[in-house]
Image 1 (tube, rainbow over the protein chains, first blue to last red):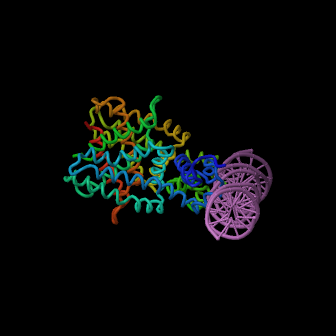
Image 2 (cartoon, rainbow over the protein chains, first blue to last red):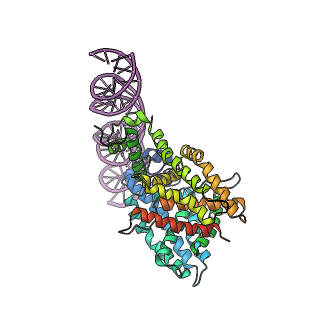
Image 3 (tube, chains in turn orange, blue, yellow, purple):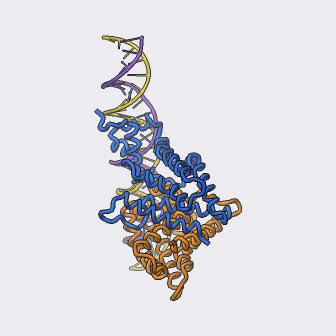
Length: 204
Length: 204
DNA sequence: CTATGCTTCAAACGATCGTTTGATACGTGA
DNA sequence: TCACGTATCAAACGATCGTTTGAAGCATAG
């Protein structure tokens, strides 16, 4: 009897997501992962091939979904969106993803880890599966902020992405108060971030 | 003959800083560190006691300096500083530190890793050695932005700290161009960040 | 010169890492 | 019922991890 209604693969992915978020990619061992998933140690290499491939799969699963939602939110905007709405299309899907299921909250933390890892292989993977989305948003922000030079625009979007990563991953000093759920906390973070970023993007 | 004019301890600290920045705390082994430092493997446990203590020392060395400079810059501001100047007092010392010596650039990356690690022990250490500085800056920002409620102020400072961490650690998508040194790149990042953050703090 | 205290050294410790192996269990179509 | 492909299992592989050990090196004080 397996200890869950989900398949071995799914259980591994979810346990890996949680543990990678908590201890990092090097810090979480396959023995921890398979033990948490209630599967045999060899299952990872059987289903995924290696630990590195497992890490990639953890990303692919959620990143595909995040990309889809962000592009969908972008399309919904219409011809002349406000800067707030465009920013929300970028930020809110990450928030929603973080709200779903067990591991959603963990994933935004994993994503932030990926930035920190500075691993070239991982970077390449992210830019391949992520670059076109950022390009789309850059285009929209460009038309909404026509006074900004190309390079200035890139810098500011980069700053927004960084602040978002940091805020969504709950890295900050602000501690969640008692009685405030993690979802509510994240919702607040998104609101403050959008307000801040709108002003930052419009600076000068 | 030792292979450097510096002491064993110093060489370990510098090698550790670089390798922790590159591979993370779990990802960089003591064998890598001592090999890069050209010292015996046992030297780490002899001089520092353990790997964890070494990690703490890596932080303490630079953080003390960063704190000192930030507080000094804050004192230099005078009675009624501009928001730009106050922000510069927070941001520029990090930039200057990153410019010095071999490992300065590495340290801001290590600092960013610490945020990502989400390790409670490390967090406690950081808040103990860092909290009072942040409090001072919060006070100054509070008088410069009297229209903001307490909580709103905390959120915005948190966002600034996050964006700074991210930008200084060079995690962003913006790649340094050929012919631009790492120092110049970081200088540009600081300028853009200050401009962005001033507007973000003043939002609404 | 000898003795003392600090430092460095090669070597080994047990633990844990990612991965592989070969046997076993299970479901499905012939 | 039997054979076959998929999945799971306990066990072990060699490698590497952080740490410890005890001897050797080396400067300085008596």
